[in-house]
Image (cartoon, rainbow, N blue to C red):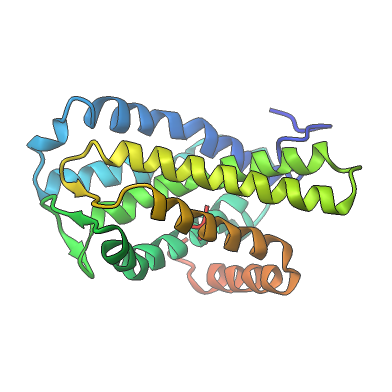
Amino acid sequence: MSSKGSSWLAANPSKRWTEVFFLSYSPFWILWALCILVPFQLYEHLDENGYLLVGLAAAVPCFLLPLLLPNKADEGKPWHQWFWVKAHVWIAIFGYIGNYFWTHYFFNLLGAAYTLPSYKLNGVPIPMYLMTHAYFCLYHAVSNVLLRRVESHLSHAPLQTRKVARGLAVFLLSYATAYMETLTISHVRHIQLKHLLAIRHTCFAQYRSLHDISRHWQPLRQSVKHETALLGSAMHSVPVLHLY
């Protein structure tokens, strides 16, 4: 897919390939997880190992498929400069922080509880860490594409208009994300939410706003790029936020 003249896809070929891959892969795990596993309550037959396999089935292809698919955008580059690798490191770190630390905030604020049989890390089911990664790959790609479209469409508009439009787009994306995610997980008996939507929308809006700020605050962006490069150089055997 070419982005020549496109106001949707990234101009950077490596980033564009990553976004197209995330958008292309996501419907497959959504189909079996949210259109089959949840509606038909097949998860009721799962034990700890079954839930772990579900999480792995959604997350592992995010890492594995890019290694198997042709990608001319990254030919000749060292692996730690591939955009999809840097994106996965970013998403994995942020997803880990979000699950390990911030999930307890949602436990208290939303009256949430996970009752599924599962191996846990800091009280949070490990499959949630894995599913978070699959979700966030989709969130990042959709957010980037839509916000890029808004910015491109209003590129000649006054600065204040662009700021208002971007803020509105971030709010709508936050609300839509929160609503759809809450709607889907509310059908899973083992995920209980006492105070479903209102507070969650607010939290997601703040969450996305942080992402938006980080994309436009140059020192923070440079710091993130620098730390990601260091991670890639230091971890030769292992190939970065749940922000989106």
